[in-house]
Image 1 (cartoon, rainbow, N blue to C red):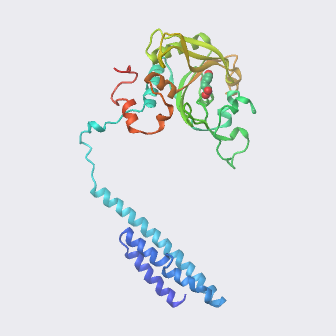
Image 2 (cartoon, protein in one colour; image 1 turned 180 degrees about the vertical axis):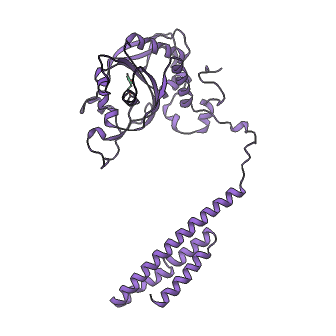
Image 3 (cartoon, helix red, strand yellow; image 1 turned 120 degrees about the horizontal axis):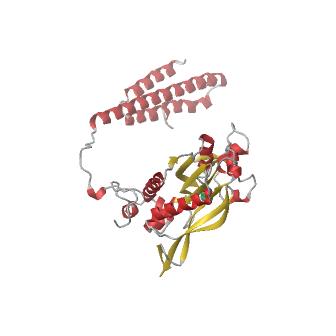
Amino acid sequence: MNQSIATLKNELIQMVEAANDLSALEHARVTALGKKGRITDLMKNLGSMDPEARKAMGAALNELKDEIATLIEKQETGLKHQALNDRLAHETVDITLSPRPERSGHIHPISQTMEELVSIFADMGFSVAEGPDIEDDFHNFTALNFPPGHPAREMHDTFYLPDDPDETGEAARKLLRTHTSTVQIRTMMGQKPPIRIICMGRTYRSDYDMTHTPMFHQMEGLVIDKNTHMGHLKGCLMDFLRAYFQIDNLPVRFRPSFFPFTEPSAEVDIGCSRKDGGLKIGAGDSWLEILGCGMVHPNVIKNCGLDPAEYQGFAFGMGIERLAMLKYGIPDLRTFFESDVRWLQYYGFDPLARPNRATGE
Ligand code: DAH
């Protein structure tokens, strides 16, 4: 290597190694590799050299540049590590300090509602199941009896993920789950009946306005056994709705509907009254749609490897934000996700309160 480059190299190495804090290291980086740095300067001269010399010098300079850049990176890692250790050694947090009452945290209404749902369904013998947010076409649609090309697929405004080169075929196509009904499939494929589960979690659809956000929460319920019938479905959901809204004689109505994964299917309304622009849940002359349900379609049971001649059951699904808005009088869905601490202070819950407390208690 050219003598002057060897000297420069030693000089730069010394400078980098002597940098004992991040700003000194940055200074060293600029001196060596910056726009007007020592190495950059030499590179600018390459153009005026004859081809042979330019080739040798160019290669040497590139090598030097890489070496110094690697050294700077190594020095930076060391300095950062050291800075963190210094902080850990000197900074302390006194966790015995009492909380400041004016800063007390609040439980988000979604978390509160989920706790209430778990507590009601746990009393009825349900356990909590989970499934992934990133799903595939099979669990979100096909296994739930949405055949390829079925128009109900279009209604879901699905977020698809880019194609995965390792996976081929429509069934493996990745997406963000559009409903928690996917967990019906995962549960039936993963455990033997009798099944009695609820699942709560995030769901996603490409939609945004007063009543839709691209991410929202749903709760799903599934019961599979040998003798489960529509009477069980009605009783279970009426008990649930009356417990959740804490109104013993809450009117509940089942209306025929359609979902690909249930047959027969129903939508459930609860009684309410609307006066002077206000909405009051309970006896009244009006109805409010609250959830979807039905007897699990034999095709879905078959798709999960169970025999529909032996097993049957029911399923239901609902939006958690809607349940929270109705019970706690929250008017705008979008505010749930704005992270406004004043909103949380107003609508949030005391962390030490027990779930399912009545409003205003
Ligand atoms: N998956 C439906 C939706 O997102 C909700 C639903 C309806 C779930 C009926 C169910 C059901 O389990 O039986 O709109």
